[in-house]
Image (tube, rainbow, N blue to C red; front, side):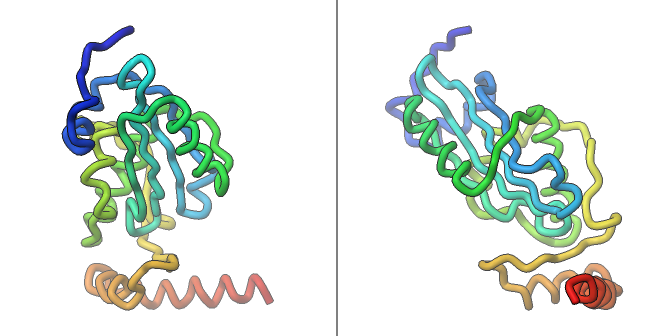
Length: 189
């Protein structure tokens, strides 16, 4: 299928807005066992022109924060698209994943995080177009650990702020988090 679309002279943010109408080139996930540890890494690319691509990376915390990190690239030739994917593959082994499942995972995690008062990473404003965030999705997954939020601190997180917000949303959160910490430490002893 060929598309007539002149994106070469547009700003990247303008091009991204219309990218959802183009076919998926690849949809990959780093770990199909993400439900067991609450973190999913996804890569989605679209074939925008015969030899041009739009790609996005998503790091999704399914236990609490939703989209923790994301970025999108547009108007990449094949070599640059492969370089982008290889950059992710340096840290994560990627395997094919169903696109609608990826959308459900990403958008569902964002909705869950929003219910706790958290917004997606600021670069979501760009990468949202790759997964058609404005289109309805089927809710296929459960979020949180056993249905409850569980915050696992990342290197760039403001842990105090996040814990304070969780304590206002879920008054028993701090007690559960402490219990989880104690149980996980006993596992390592």
